[in-house]
Image (cartoon, rainbow, N blue to C red; front, side):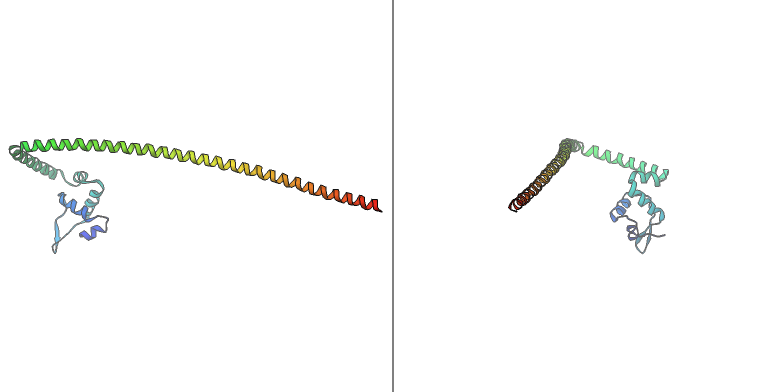
Length: 188
């Protein structure tokens, strides 16, 4: 099956990833149709592998040993040639650049160390905050329980008061009835 770039995008591959893989000189098929490049099933598999595992593993997986030897030999010769030209022309310039790179590396290490300290302090503060919230929640639950207990006691006392009040009303009614009965008896 033939896949154009739009077809590859439907397979969850972004244009950026496709062009990045093409720049890295992976062993994709070089087939064109009406000035449009298309890819086969193996290419699709290689793109998906590249997306998942990166360049090094894709090279190890899909390039054969001869291609690896050719590319490593050509890379070595390119490096040797470029080193010779650079070493002859710009030694002092490279030393200065190396010093600035080392200085920037030290600065970046300091910045990273500071940021790690900040992250560590934030983590500690987050942990302390979480502990405080837990303690606050426990204390709130304890106060709610105390309040409920006080309310129950209050309700009990109010109930006792109304019971006593009822007994007093009944007692006074009986007393008035008895006195009235006695007065009626006495008047007869």
